[in-house]
Image (cartoon, rainbow over all chains, first blue to last red; front, top):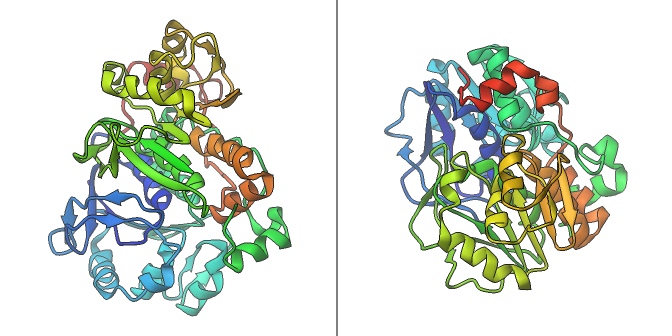
Length: 208
Length: 208
């Protein structure tokens, strides 16, 4: 099972590595890190990652996982990326996104008229790109599964793992990753964090 | 603020990228990916990451974050790594670990007689290395903060962010990462997953 983890400059590392850690371990899974070319890709906080293959070489992945980016509006202009997504989606078993990765799928035409989720701050943009926007953390619609912002990729991937390998396997992965979350604060959504912090994020305020 | 994210072959990607995503964003934070040399490091599921600096070059990091590994017993033999940890810890503001990264800190002498946590399957080994093992998800002891298995690095790093930049900044980061976890199953600890799945992990069974 060839799993394509999509790389592009400015991607958000945890969007990709959450699902990667969940999905890449089982013996039947073959992870690929695919980009436009083999040049090192730098994520939006500076992590340098080396692609293992290219869009031209990987034309029939079974599963595609598209991460988002804090520079997602710029990423929408990457036609080599959205063209590849449009080309490979018809033959995937599952096409998945995390965070604003769903805007790339929408730009590629994959989400037109379909329910999907995204980072809470990008919901309007995803709607403008033609999707039926949900505020759920994970949305499954046929062969497309989308997760909300950044950390939601772990929850999305566990649901995908259950679809691929059954619930017991997904639970085994959860136990191996000791995924028993205990956030020290309760500020993970606009509703919980309140209007001040939410406005700060919308205005681009950086913590500290 | 120089933050050293430690790389070595076989490290677990999410152990590192969880804290990285939490800690690397604020303007005052300068993330470094440090390894014995600048050769590409491959994590335990195949992700190739390029170090940005070396142990020899980075001698006074303010913060050190040590990830674990599914091959952590082998990692304990990496004396260049444990020697570096022993050398830099006395001048760090915080020394942090995720998962079996705490066994590396213990091997380096950082945890002798101190409370610390680790992946649930490595508790006995951590005790043998001289730490006072806790089953808590995050343990703070003076200038050392340790997290439990893999995904616990996110919870650990949010606590560390609150120490570094205050609670409001930590909440802002949590909101930016939309960290409002909703695991589809309740199997993230041995107690919750039950004896069968726990025994399977101990015996090295891989999911699917």
